[in-house]
Structures are given as structure tokens and as C-alpha cells.
Image (cartoon, rainbow, N blue to C red):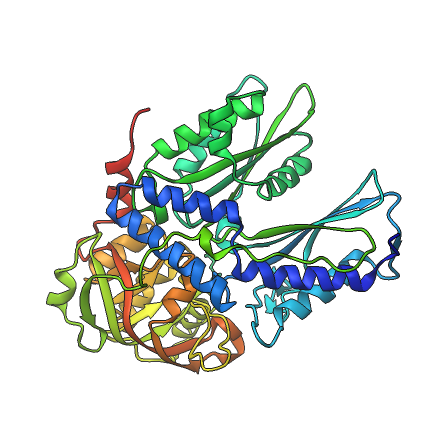
Length: 497
Ligand SMILES: O=C(O)C[C@H](O)C(=O)O
């Protein structure tokens, strides 16, 4: 005999779930990534996947976030019409309380990434509220909950179209993914919502990302529906694009393709596409009145044994960068950086450029230095800094030319490709663009020896920090001549099926 499903059952369970997903990948994801690592033949992509797997295990044992982007809190609530719920407040209020508690949890604070007033001041709400909620009334007497933490980089690569009914969904998806770039941190999962109304297609795509990765099983049993056929076709065709881990070029770009569909208007074929990144994080539980959910940690034997976290590469002294060293770097080279650099991402770039326009000096001297596009998680205990992986550099492209010209900056570190405008500026200024592995944030943070905020502290995680690194692993992505690994890598690995 179970009792009421109380407000505390929901709040405690969701708060626990948000903490849980911040450091545990799902077992199916770990296994699929391990299989992809075994399959991959591109050395650069394999190295990136090795770091993702090492980072995943470190996060699981250290109970610290897999990725510095601890995401927006996404909650999918299916409330049984006969469920004995005993709630006075709205689901939004209850789930926001859980989110606040999880993101401010002292032993493992998560990064607050949500900004209010998106068209105006974009003020950080400090506790990652509000959560994004999909609520549905369903048959039954239980409350079924899926909690996911969705990173901004993969969410930004969402695409939508309404095709003609006679058009090919598969062709549109292949064409779209071929132009997405690497900001969604492949290898990951492509979620599709097909049919319904335009809003329903998007909701279905989002929800499909919570389904288990089961491509190997589907391949073994064969297709039983049009959705299965689409999944199998797209899995082959998307991997044949050669994008590879982090866009470096390789055999594995997607671990799975998920498809949800719904009846639609005879005139329409809406298709929503949402990627999920290397920090795929979600967990499911059911409330029946017997108490809060009990979440089981994944077994540590799920992770492959990859030895220690060391990475081989050429050592570069950031305190003695000169033009001949920069000119000797080529796309694909693995480097281990040591020395002093500065952090700065979207909001800091915007402010620096606004201040330059107003004739003000830059807040830090970037001459001959490196900037790292990152918004770290706060440190706990004896940590110097929390998980601190790269953010998508493409968003900094429009600032790059003016910043290089005004500051004498020489190195930029981020993730994903640069656009033509930024590559031209990099070449013109004899600078170099490097990438760290998106989704390996806890591992990357271990290379940081000291960190102190030096400017724009009001921007929170977007403030400028001065950091000292030792043997920080990065890959050369754009060299002083403007050659880019994100062009050459996928071109080399693209294949006709
Ligand atoms: O916000 C971040 O730290 C990263 C973001 O999710 C991105 O992938 O660009």
C-alpha cells in the first residue's frame, strides 16, 4: 500500500537526478562511446574519444561534472490521471526548487548558465532556474519523470524545417548535419521529431534523445517500421560524412539516430533535428507514493581500461611564444601547453569590443598571449578550478579580427571550427587557433595550476580569469597560414557508402 506522491518526493528526486546526471553518463552511452573508440581509425578522433572516456570515468568517481556546461535542466513529466499527487504548488515551482537545490549543492556546485531577459540584459539567474518542462497527462496512477541536463552547444545546433510530403527526410538530415560543424561535440546522438505540428515535432525530437542507444540491437534485428529504416539509413549516411569526433575527421560522428513520429497534416512534413553532445546526460524514474526515487550508480566496470590520463604531445611554453614557434605548428599537431593564459568567452568578448569602441584600454594585456574560451564550474575543496572545458569558438568569430588587431593576441583555444572571417584574421595576424576536447572538462581542469579572476567579475562564469596551466592537451586546428583541420579532416575521412 503506497501513499501520496508528495511535493518532497518530486523535489528530492529531481534534485538528486540533476546531481546524478552531472557526473554519470548513462550505461548505454558509455558502452556506445567505448565501441566507437574501438572502431575509430583516425588518430586525432580516437585521441579525442579517449579523453572523453577518461573524463567520463573521472567524473563518475570524483562526483564532479562531466562538462563545464552543466546544461539547462530539462524535465519531462508524465502525470497519471489517477496518480495520488498531493501538490499545492505548480510543477514549475516545484521543479525550480529542485533545480536551485541541485545547482547550488555545496559538495558539487553546478554551473549556473541560464540568463533572464534574453533580449536585454541577459542577467544570470544564479541558480540555473527556470527549468524547461514538458508536462503531459497520461493514463495510470504514477508520475513518470525523465531529467536531462542539456548543453547549450548542442542545443544551438537545433534545426527545423517543414518539407513537402514528397521530400526525403533522410536527404534533409544528411545535408543539415553536413553543415552543422562540430559545435555540438560529436560523436553524439541525433534526435528527430517527424510529423505532428511544428511545435510537437520539436518536443518529440527533444524527447527522443532520452531513449536508450540501441543501434547495435537495431542493426542485428533489422527494421520493423519506417522509423527503423530511417534510423538505419541515417546512421550509415551520417557516419559516412567523415566529420568524426570534435569534427577532426573520422569514422564515427553519430552513436545513434533516434526518431519519434506522429500523424500530421496531409499538406505537411515537419522535421525537427536536435543533436545531443558527448555530455549526453539523462535519467528516468517513476514516483508511486512510496518515496523519492533511488538512483543506482553505473558499475565502474562499464568503462574501458584506458590507462592513465597522460597525453603525448609537443610542449609549448606560453610565456615565451614567438612567431617562429607559431609558424611551426600544423593542423592536427597535439600540443601540451604550459604557462599563463587568460579566459574569456561570449560576454567578455562583447564587453571588450564595446570598450575598445569607446576608446578604453583592454582590461588585460593580451600581447603575445593565449585566450581560452571557457566558462568554468566553481571550485570545491582543494580544487583550483572546477571542470573547465572549451566553449564553441564560432560564436567568437565576429570579435576575432578586431581583438587580434587591437591586442596582439597570438593563440586562441576553444572547440569546433572557425568561420572564414575568423580564419582570415588568424592568417593575417600570424595567430593560431587550438582546440581542447569538448566534453572532457574535468580532465582539462586538472592541467590548471592556478586561477584568479582579473576582470569583469560581475559576469560570473563569463569573467576573465588569469590561469596558469601545465601540460594542457590541445590540438592545432587553424595554423598561421589559415589551414584548418575542420576542413581537411572530414574531407579525408568522408566516404561513399
Ligand atoms: O557553455 C559552455 O561552456 C559550452 C557550450 O555548451 C558550447 O558547447 O558552446
